[in-house]
Length: 380
Image (tube, rainbow, N blue to C red; front, side, top):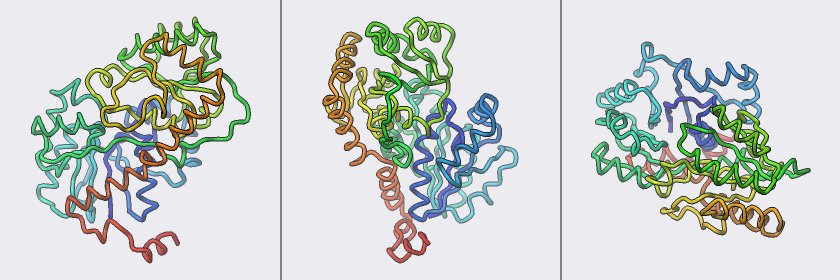
């Protein structure tokens, strides 16, 4: 297939978690012989912040982890959809795009039936900012890919679309895999952005306070940490590492003994079954994971085996002590989580699902699945 993707960015993951999954999906699609083109807005805020804060050399470093990764920049004023979508079989438009772009692509599809068009939603705004999401014009879209069942059901219940599929995020195991552990640099590492005060109390209860009270050596990476957050880290003796390129996260996990997952409040209260991408990546990296409560309504994992659960700050302290004081327990949890990821939660699994959805939409199987002979030719 020729597949065209409209996303905020594939080059930058500065405060942009969708790049994590997109990179892995694009690489997997290309390895299977599909032709993929990614389009992102010129001067997008994530890429601008990356370059302004860390320089163009970070884009060169990205090539070391994703050789040949590339994108196409566009402006709404100059975007020629006839040219861009010529010969395309499948188009994915991410929900973090301008309403005008979403509408224009839908309008183009109404007059051009040679491709299938899907809207991809990977955020909680369908629940927390329903009016803004309802303003996306999906009239001429063939369906929606939603990163959780609750979001999928909402699109159908609100009549925003006629068809919708659940398409969870997953780990890009070309980058997220257990790295060699030479020497530990500390006890706990956490990688995540502070955000919009959606989990301030939770970060104190399940991360900052337990580290302080147990006297752990810890490091935190992320962006958008306000002064009060930085002060709290300093008071707890936690080192702040600033922004960390996502492709380096697995290397950092290998330097520490444990990590934690602290979901944002909207995911806990209104979006059961959606863990976000961070736990997938941590488990794929082979580090023991302890999570504050979230409802695994879709049975993606086995809580208590793939990762440990702490319902309170006191329980988090007990779970941390259990992992840090027992190498056997730490290894048991890490290996169970890793095997679950490898068995059903990799970008390869998600591309399998996307190919099946493409066939369901009516794209010819001959375009979707390469024959053994075609595969050999592609690999050459």
